[in-house]
Every structure is written in structure tokens, then in C-alpha cells.
Amino acid sequence: FVGDTKVGKSCILSRFVNGTFERDIPATIGAAFFTKVLTTPTGEVRLHLWDTAGQEKFRSLTPMYYRSAAVAVLVYDVTSKESLEGLEAWAAEIADKAPNNIKLVVVGNKIDLADERQVSPTAAQEFVEQLNATFYQETSAFTGEGINELFSQIADLQLDDVFLKQTEATKQPEPSSGCSC
Ligand code: GDP
Ligand code: MG
Image 1 (spheres, helix red, strand yellow):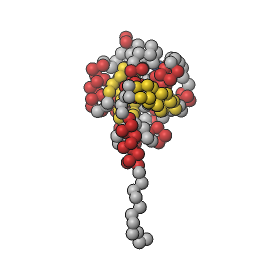
Image 2 (cartoon, helix red, strand yellow; image 1 turned 30 degrees about the horizontal axis):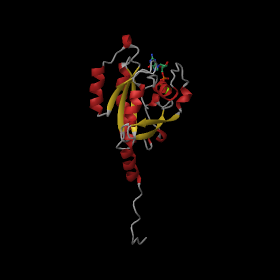
Image 3 (cartoon, helix red, strand yellow; image 1 turned 60 degrees about the vertical axis):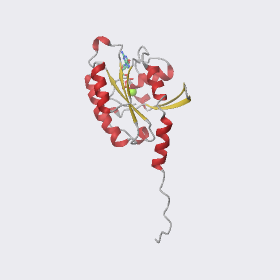
């Protein structure tokens, strides 16, 4: 989960994992890793979820976040056009550092704040297409709207394929025979 600070990444994870909305999640809890099992039509999927911690200010990721990541969830706040624009830098960071076959998902959070909305679903959708993201989901960590849909769509992404390909890609080449050194 990446995106500018205060867009609601920690609240989305807390809503999904604990089923509650915590208005003031201390920034330190952001060093968090969560895991949860979801039942899908094709079986059980264990999601390993990383919340970015204090990295947001620098828009840069440490290896712990992107090593073996199958999906990058780019979160913005629908009441902040700036946070949507901020996703460009995040997408660039992902393209630069994360595995090549990582899937991108874009999330527009805080849809309960309808009166303060600055980004229309259409504008968001255009951005999502530009990024070639797999899907776009609107959420409210506050009301819970869209949260289960977000995670069940992620669980349905056939990520096994991504993991298998990553493992292939990181395999060490066989030592060549007949080495004379
Ligand atoms: P993070 O920095 O991206 O992890 O953002 P947080 O999860 O810490 O949330 C930042 C602020 O936005 C907090 O004050 C939350 O209470 C608030 N917030 C997060 N999600 C929502 C939401 O869906 N609706 C509303 N109204 N506020 C939210
Ligand atoms: Mg946070």
C-alpha cells in the first residue's frame, strides 16, 4: 500500500483486518505487516499486506515493501486532487524498484466525504487507464464501503502466476561447466 501521507492507507488496512475505523492511527503503527485469509471461489488465499511507514514523505520505498510484492495498491484521497497527482511519483517508484510483473491497483478513499470531493470517478478512471492499472476501486475506511470488494478483487487476481514467474526470474543461472578459472 503506497500513496501520499494521510490518504487513509492505515485506516483501510485497519478496517479490513480489524473491522474497525481508527480515526487516529499513530504514524509508527505504519511499520505494519498484516496477514489475512480470504476464501475465494478457487480456494483460500492468504494476503500479506504491507503498510508503508513514514516513507510517504520521501515517496521512496525500501526493499522490504517491494521485494516479492505481487500487487502495488496505490491509494489517493478523493477530496485531494494533489494526492491523485502524487500517484504518478508512486507509479514511477514502483516501475523503478518493484518486480516487472507487479500488478497495479488504484484506490480512491474517503468517498464518505462526498461534499468535499475533488476528483470525479471519471477523472480517476482516466488516470487508471493511463497507468495501465488492473482495476480501480473507491472506498471509505470510515463507513467500510468498498473495502471488502477491494480485497476480494485482489485475492481473485490469480497471483500464483505472478509469484511463480517471480521465482523463475530470480533463479540463479546454472554454473557453466568446463570453467577453466
Ligand atoms: P495514511 O497516512 O495514508 O496511513 O492515512 P491514515 O489511515 O492515518 O488516515 C489519515 C486521516 O484520514 C485520519 O485522520 C483518518 O481518520 C482519516 N481517514 C482515513 N480514511 C478515511 C475515510 O474513509 N473517511 C474519512 N472521512 N476519513 C478518513
Ligand atoms: Mg499510515
